[in-house]
Structure formats: C-alpha cells, structure tokens
Length: 158
Ligand SMILES: [Zn+2]
Image (cartoon, rainbow, N blue to C red; front, side):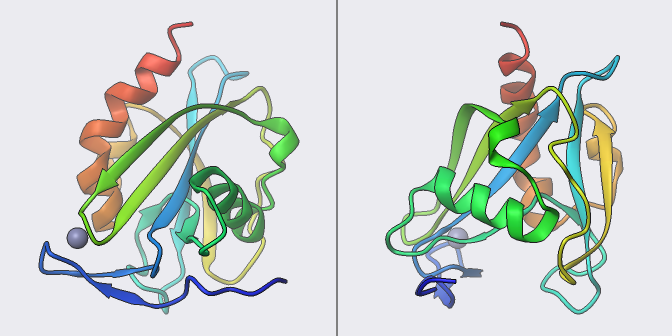
C-alpha cells in the first residue's frame, strides 16, 4: 500500500459532499462472453456510505493517479478484478467542478476474477444492461446511469 492521499470529503458546488479529495473513479465492467452482455455490480455493505444499494466498484483517486489507474485499483481491492482481463473502451466524466466522478467502461471476455474481496461489499451480481435500472441503485449510479447506459450500449457496437 502506498500513500493514500485522496481520502477525504469535498464540499461541492452542487450542494452535496462527495468522497475523494481529487475526485473519484469507478469501473463499469461489461462481460461479453455471455449470450447477453452483462454489467458487474456490487451490493454495498450496510455500514458503508450508501449501504444496501447496488454500485460500481470504485473510490477516491489519489493525487498521482489517473482515472483508469484508480478505477482498476479499486476494482481489484473490492472485487479482485484482474486488470489483464480488461480492455478499456470509454471514460465518462461526471464533472461537478470542484469534484468529478470518472466511470471507466471496460470489456472482458470472462468474469475477470470477480468475487467479494473486501468487507465493503456483501454480494456481486452480473446484470443485463436493461436490468440495471430496475435495481435499488446507489444514488450516484442511479443519476449517472442515464448517461452511462447509452454509452455502454455504444461501446458494444464495434
Ligand atoms: Zn457535486
């Protein structure tokens, strides 16, 4: 473990406080070896921020990290995701000004080793793209899914 200087809250212009002094990043992993493409979600443990809701693996960026580095590090820590299994396709930035959340959309041709790797999540789920919005989503994901859904579908066209 290196220095983790990204931990901390930001009082944002949007009126909310967000986690991650240098912003945050998450991984939207799409599995393509199944009959329908499937998206990887984790059920956040009750004691966490937004506990009991489905979210993407992710967290605070450190000062030296770009969004892909941070998203893949968090996905590995939380869900054991293997970087070697992924191809990064697109980055969606939800930019609030003083804070931003970058979602890294990546594809894999297998489960990328996904499992519950730390106590922040209690369950993992591969969901079809259309099923995502029917789940009890973390507020941040619920808001960004409106933009992420068409972008994710777009990455599957090539
Ligand atoms: Zn904000």
